Each structure stands twice: as structure tokens, then as C-alpha cells.
Length: 352
Image (tube, rainbow, N blue to C red):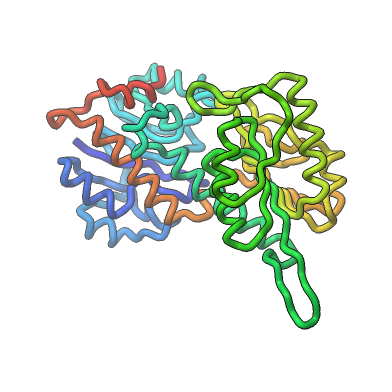
């Protein structure tokens, strides 16, 4: 069986690292990769060759498994009939394209659909990538912010610490909180899920709480859309918090739906001059109505960052984690040296 990948013109992360190439060889796969495949993530062809992979400059044929990160050119992919394409395929956004690919005889595994069960944690690409993205979002915000972050006491006077507000306390949000705290900021956070309060406070941040009995958590642990009454109360609470926030990181998402709009233009105008807002939900519509995807804009003294590739901006570390997740996934597919989709984790990711 042959395992390969595809080169994406935009994505810097890779789905196979030299480390996992060795593991695939031990599983019995022939690893064949395009030339310069890992260059964007800091991996050389020589490293892959040393790991047992073969490098091809021509089109790679007879592939059993194509592993990818997040392909942006699905329509133009040339894949073997009967093969598997495994990666972040954005099944809600790309539903029609994926159906066309499936009708051509290609099996599709969208890793975003991995179930939230204990035994699936080692394959959970969303969590590993969100961790990196949450960290990077804070680093980028602080690089843009024109002042120091921690409390500084000098003979010339005291500089107050920056105030950071994190909206959405999922994996990315919790990492953003932890990173901002390590940098010395005063951090507060908001989430519609009641259970998030304990997690936020355990990291030393203040939980911004809406006085309402409604809980925004689904059975699977994700956030859900809230009632109009809750949204009104939420908007009032966030408006107050934004007025005193130097850095805002928004991570609020609803699976399969556009990101909830939580920050209006009027709210942005009340933020302190020189403040920074990083909208990590930009790709799915943005939590701020002013956000522009993959752009950095300035509005009334506030910088708004709408990058959609925070994890990709730390490509080597993100690739290491992603590649391990996807290796664990592939290992579940291998039964008696044959590909099987019988496992419930694999079944959950199939697109038809």
C-alpha cells in the first residue's frame, strides 16, 4: 500500500513529517512524497529520505491514502479511484465539492468530524491545532500592541499591565488565556457555557458572566446558538468589557454554522486607542462585524486582525502535532494489513 500527500499552494503545514514517515514504514506502507513537500514547514527532502520515504518529481500513481492538512484546491485534485483523502476537508463549507469527489470513487475522511470521545483524543486535530492557534493569536496581538504587557515598576514610575479579554473559552481560548497570563497581562474571559467558568478561573483569569440561567453547551460539549434575550444581555456585558480591554481575542464558533456576531462597529469605537482585536473566527464570518478575512485593518485607533492561518504561522510545531494525530487515525484504519473503516472513529469522519 502506498501513502502520499498533496502540496497546497497556501497551506504551510504538512500532514507527514520525517518522524511519522518512519512509523508508516513500520506499519507496512510505502511512503512516496512530492519533491520539496515539507519545505514550508522546515523539513527537507533529505530528512524524508533518511526516514525511509521516496521522493518523486513526477505525478505519484497508485496511492492508497492521500494525507493532507487543509486543501484549498479540492476541485482540481487528481486522486486515484478507490483511494482515501484524509484531512481537514471543511465538510460543511465544501459539501457539494466533496460529493462530486465521492461520486468519482474517492473515499473521504474529514478529520473535523472526529467524535469527542476519550479514545479519539489522540486523533483530535482540532484540539492540537487550536492550541497552537490560540498561542499564536496572543503573540501576534502583543506584537501589534504598541505598549508593554506586564506590570512594570521603575524609578520613573509604574506602567500598568495590559488588559486582555478572551471571548470563547474552548481549546484556543484557554490557550490564549494561559499565554496572556504568562506574559503578565490581566486577563478576563467570556463563554456561553457555564462549565467554562471553572476552567477560566483555574488559569487565573476573571470570568465575565451573563446573569442568565441559559446554558450554551451541547451534549457534545460544543457551544450552541443562544436565545435573543440572552444575546441582548451578552451584548451589554461585552460592550462594558470592551471599553477597558487593550487586547481582545475572539474564538467563538458554532459547528457547521457561521461564527456568531458578537462585536459591533459601535463597540469597536469605544475600545481604547491603540487596542488590538484578533478575530480567530474570521474564516467562518468573524465574531466582529468589521473583520476582513486574512487582513489587518485599523478602525478608529483599533487594529483588527482577521488571519485564518494562525496554526500555519507556526508551521513546524503545528505539523508535528497534526502528523501525529493523523498517524494515530491511520493506525485505526489498518486491520490485518488492510484498510478498514469499521472503527466508530473512522465511521464518524466519512463524507458521502
